[in-house]
Image (cartoon, rainbow, N blue to C red; front, side):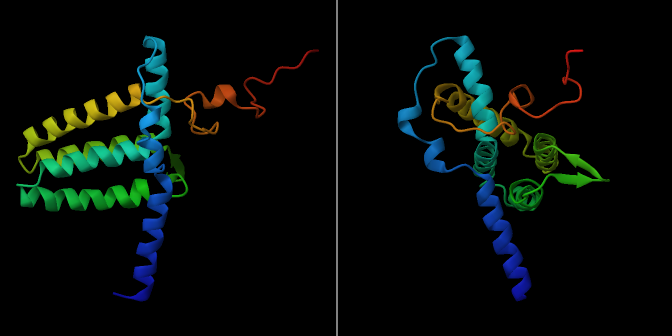
Length: 178
């Protein structure tokens, strides 16, 4: 292996770690409490999914990987797809560009999730994929609803209400009195 390749791998690993929120923040036990009502639960769900998106994606991938332990060929396929996750989702600092158009992170995540499911279903472990998907969704769903959002610091770009909270002058909403 060349020194340039090793340094590129180190940079990609550091960049991947930078997109993840601190695990201590995600797993803070004092932040877990019952939501007061359905509105509070849905607000928590949206805000936590937005704030911890990369962490939740990694958790879902780990659950999927653990379900494949007794299927070596499927693990190889999974590792190849996981390399695509690292390159296209976790280790990017700027938005992915395809044919000159910026692709949002959510679109990249959904596309990679579909590729992961299709690749693993084609290796005949569809039941493992379904069961691990359900387990991942339940784990993440429970965490998003029970983790309070009062201590989260979100900037407007990552807020689910980003454009509504922005102070930027928007051509479609910039009205002046005449």
